[in-house]
Length: 511
Ligand code: XMP
Image (cartoon, rainbow, N blue to C red):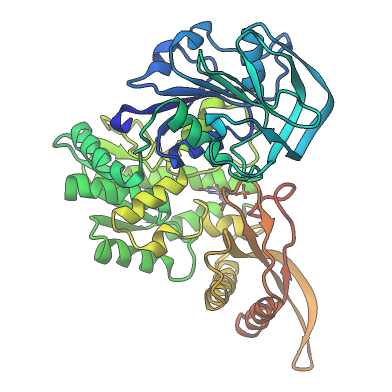
C-alpha cells in the first residue's frame, strides 16, 4: 500500500492527538501508519520507511513505567521527529535533561523560530502548547531552534543525525501553519516526493481486492452509511456481480429510508443487492426493553442472526466484506478506553459461517480519505457526505420502550427537521441533526383545548470526528420553523425542546 514506497511510521506513545499526526502526514502526501511504541523493528521497517514521528503522551519520561521504544529505532538511519513527549524521550535517550517545567505552558503560546528547514515558510509566531515537563539540557549535537518565554528549548535539531523535536503540538488546528511543519519534515528532511493521494489509491485498492478474492464470491452487509457504501462500490468495481450485498431493514430507519437506499443502490450504483424485511422480528425482540445497552445488544445479535440466515440462503460466499476503517483498527488495537456505549456495526458480524476470510479494503483509511475515495469512485457527493446514522438506528432515539406509534412520531419529526435544515442550506455545516422521542408528556393548549402530549427533542451538533462536539447554533428563525412545523404537523406532539449540551459531558445520541 505504500505508494512509491514512501511511508512514515507514527510511533504511538499514548497522546490524544496521535491519529491527527497520522492524518496530517497523509494530507501532506505520504502514507502513514500509527504503530504502538512497543512495535518490533520489522513492523516499523515495513515494506518502506522514510521517517519516524514519535508522538506525545501522558507520561513523564522519568516515571518508572514511562513508555519507551526499542533502542534500534534510533539506528534505522531515517530522520526522526519527536512531538512533545516524543521530543523529551529523544532528549533523554541521547543523554540530555528533562524535568518538571518551572512554568507549565498550556494553550496558545508565542514562539520564536530560528531559521531552519523544519520551519521554512512559517511566518507566524503562535503554537499550541500542552506540557508539564521541559527540556533542561540538550544532548551533544542537539541545538535549540525555537524558544518561548518560559521554554528555551521549544524545538531542537541535530542535523548530522537527522533528529528533531518540537515541544508544541503542530498537529492541532490551534497551531497555525502546523501542517507546514510536517510537510517540511517530509520534504526537506526525509526527502519525500509526497505523491500519496486517495485518487491514486483507488487503482491499487481495486487490484489488491482482485488478487485477494481471485475468482471467489463476496458477501457484504450494506447499511446505507458512508463506509459500507464506499467499500461495496470499490469491491463491485473490482469483481462486479460476484459481490452480493445484503441490506437489512430492521424497522428502525428514518422515513422512506429503506426504499430510497435500495433504489439508489440498485438503480444508480448498480449493485447486486438483496433487501431483507426484518422489521417485525426486530420490533418483537425489542418490545418492552428500555435499557439502552440492552437495546444495542439485542439489535446487534439479531442483526447477526438475520445476516447468517440470508448468507445460508445464498449458499455462502468465500469472503465477508466489512467497512472497517483505520480509526476502528487503531481503537481496537489499544483497548485502553472506557466503554461508554457498545457500538454495533458491521464489525460484529459473524466470522464463523464458512467464510474463507474477511475483506476489509478500507482498513488503512481515515474517514476523510474514505469520502475522497468515494467521490473518486463516482459515488454522488450527497451520499458521501451523508450525516452519520447509528447502526441501532431510531432505537436509541426513542427513550424508553419502543413502539410503532413512537417510531412514527419520531420519523415524522425527524423528517421535518431534515427538511428545514436542507431548506436553510445548513446540511454541510452540521455534523449530525436528528430528533429524539423523549417519552416526556406535558400539558399544553391547542385551539382552546388542553393537551397532554409528547415532547420532542431536537439535537444538532458540529464536530470534525464525533469525539468532541459543540451543540450547533441554529438560527432562531430556523428553530422557530422547526418547532412550529413539528407541533403543527405531527400528531401527539405539543412541545419541542432544543438540546444545548456539548460532548463531553453529553454524548451525541441520547442513549
Ligand atoms: P455518541 O452518542 O457516542 O455517538 O456521542 C458518536 C457517534 O457514533 C454514532 N453512534 C453509533 N454508531 N452504532 C453505530 O454504528 C452505535 O451503536 C452507535 N451509537 C452512536 C453516533 O450517531 C455518532 O455519530
